[in-house]
Image (cartoon, rainbow, N blue to C red; front, side, top):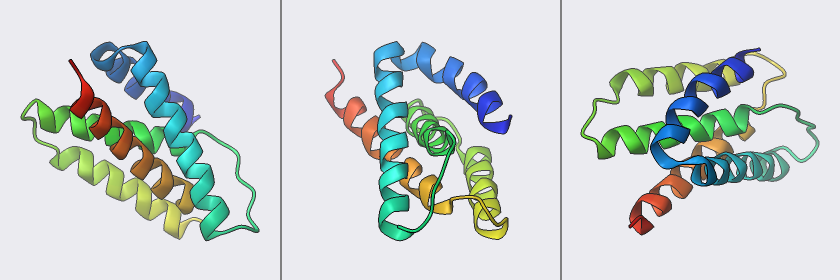
Length: 116
């Protein structure tokens, strides 16, 4: 339920700013890098969920907000808290969260750099 709600809130906001095609690219790359991170860091694990994509959207929001001169302190606190939960609560793939965070950050930075 948290992933669905987060996707709805973050997705609506980010899609309006960068457009549907770029939004889909950021989300998809984040999910893929999240899966790759799990495969590399914990190959015996199986994961299901959209949390890597959500963390990628957190990264995208960070880049967008920073580009607009916004303050990211609250966002960094939310990201940190959610990352911490992944390390403390068993059964949550922190590897996917880190991979998604990285994939979303790199993809959004590249999109920003290549925008017209």
